[in-house]
Image 1 (spheres, helix red, strand yellow):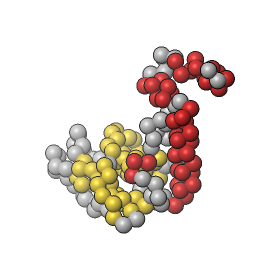
Image 2 (cartoon, helix red, strand yellow; image 1 turned 180 degrees about the vertical axis):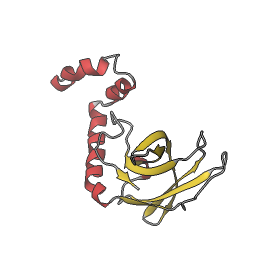
Image 3 (tube, rainbow, N blue to C red; image 1 turned 45 degrees about the vertical axis):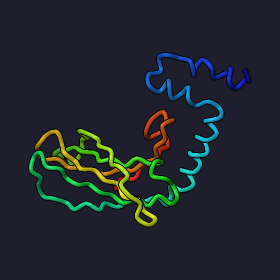
Image 4 (cartoon, rainbow, N blue to C red; image 1 turned 90 degrees about the vertical axis):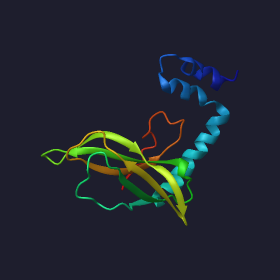
Length: 155
């Protein structure tokens, strides 16, 4: 066993790490090099990543009816699997603060030239006055936290 592996073995074998313990064990040295390469690609391309909403604002929605949510993302060479696009559903209080109630992932639907289309048929579980926001951020299964990279774009 090399010194680097011996030094980190206790952290890799801990059982109290929850779900991240399995992911931490997957960060073996061969996979770590690929993962570090992925992180570097994100850093190199993120400045040129941008997105826009394609869905139309609707003044109301009948309960039980799906609301089609669509976004176009320009990923500057990144793959659709390198990012997550989410619909954050919630309400805004009297002070203008947004409170998240649920988060729904959009699915990659198609590539349109240099852009990618992500879609969701949103059916909220509850009725009432709701608003939603869309966000896009880097995604990799070996990230310890979804926002570990520190990049996020509100659409």
